Length: 613
Figure (cartoon, rainbow, N blue to C red):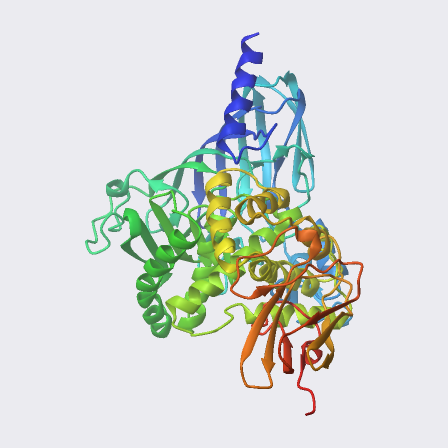
């Protein structure tokens, strides 16, 4: 009875706290880990204690973990995918090019026993008793001794060994920048169980989905190494290196290894990087957020750019606080340690730094992920566009301000990417799972470009002010949860008062395209035509014979409303009608559809007509 009462109040709390969603629940996992690193062999031994709370209404007979380092082995799903996809990631390939190249080879296929990655389970207990388990690729299957009832907790204690793979993608050792250890996806990580069941995709280098919880992690590593990553360092004085105050280089304590103790509250991942030659700098950002920077001291031009980065990062933080919502943690680290850039909880791993603009742009993009993935934690295997696309949109706007780019349409490159995809004839709907696109280029443009255009085009539909309010409310209602496309749609509908189911169905669930044209101008009569299969509301700019101008807005009937506008609002256009005719009070000499180019019309050449006098 007590468990039933606990479950009732848990569900009631979650329903009231998270955007007023009915029947919402999310699991919880608290990690305590003690890790002993052999930096010379790139191996480590770990002890993990995990307290798992079942907030679902279901009885669980099994739990699952991700063992993502196992992907870096010949014959893994990641390896086979590299050998089967037509455009494999060049960073993961020997002899760059397509797999049709006779010299092409997956880098993973070439790894030797001392170069592969692995996570090997040495022991596993449930509530103090041994429990049966088996490994299937990058998934650990655990058959619970006792089913986990709704509202109950269980303690899982594990000992495991790990080997850090040669750096191929995101995680690994000795990456292209010479960083010794980039430790992402490095620990056995509990899989998420949500309303759709267990999320158990084999890891092949796409995105992630995790269980919210608190982390307490101690890392024992050779005394020369400096660590940056997720969480708050609890013992800066003990590890020396001037960590607490980088201007003061403290003497290292005696002993072969140092113990770095981190805690991270309310996150769903834990990542770190380590190198003996890191330069560490710290500045204070808005709301007393410590901004840490870790980068290699080997290339003067790179060091110079990294030294200029903190000031820009302070401005990036302020921009996102204003336009998405307040960053809730008191720490964020920008770490040289990746290939390109990849976001993690309270930190990012970034490669290079030879070009300052690129370094700032990558930092802005990855930092934005802290909101759209690590606070609004969508399932990236299903809703990647909600993370990558939204991040692309807001980081482009941020760069436009921080770097004073003066672009009228900050994400114009996203429109160009989308148009390129449409022209290729290979577009797939955004309901395609991230790992299952026919090619990497289609995934990338779909996730980043089409996802970004989704937002800017939504601003065209409901009004830019309403879009800005929607982003703020979306964050406030759904931070620290796992929102879905429906959650975002409903937020936009509540803010704007406009119905948007049609927009989601066309833009997300289909590959239908937008194409409108000015079909005719006859004195005071203007005829517009929809030649594409996706309907949209229209903004129309008219120039009259006397030189005056007038703007019109034609809502789509399925919206059951219109955006706030100074334009003259005309009768709505039903999607079943291919043509639309309206009359003006004066003779028109020029008509233009969508003068600000916010609509992703695939043929803009027919959007404007200047009749012959």
